[in-house]
Length: 224
Ligand SMILES: Nc1ncnc2c1ncn2[C@@H]1O[C@H](COP(=O)(O)OP(=O)(O)O)[C@@H](O)[C@H]1O
Ligand SMILES: [Mg+2]
Image 1 (cartoon, rainbow, N blue to C red):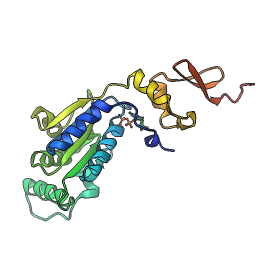
Image 2: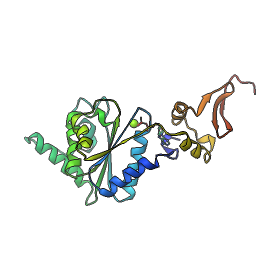
Image 3: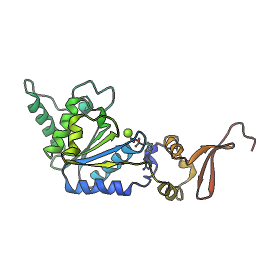
Image 4: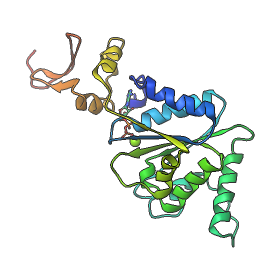
């Protein structure tokens, strides 16, 4: 089971702000937070909500490997480019092609790790949001420098910035009341360890919630 199968814990307020953005249909939302805080997960939930509301959805991700290539992050959704266009024309052509993918429906675009966008992809992301071609749901690491067009998204008021803080204890406890300990998967576990819910104790990996104690896995050398 992947970590994404684990039900969404908390984040109802933040998700509500994404939903409100979707209802406005314009601009976007910038989800900012530390590594591992849950930006991609929340953005994916937002994209699923967009699909349920009738948006056509697209997802791209910036990585260190795509950062040096013009439009690297958007490689999977680029149209055949017309030769001899200037930069502005190229941007408009791509933005138009992406909007066309909606076939009449509004488009919601998830841009994961937008702090790593190459310059051209950053300009395209900005173009999509300003020209109301797409609702842009971007994730960024807080405290890292952002490409200017991404920074402009919220500085110019096109996109709302939502800062993600680590999940509160109550959110986790509510959740743990309803789940089977088998569901604490390897992928979600680092997240729960970071939040202090899973500890490596004398008997093995232990999770404590509301006075209840779960032994997730026994230490190999443990006698009992
Ligand atoms: N609110 C949440 N509820 C359940 N699981 C979550 C939540 N937020 C994050 N996770 C899980 O924690 C892990 C790290 O989250 P992720 O979204 O990849 O972090 P980030 O993108 O901020 O680095 C993933 O396995 C993810 O599915
Ligand atoms: Mg992420």
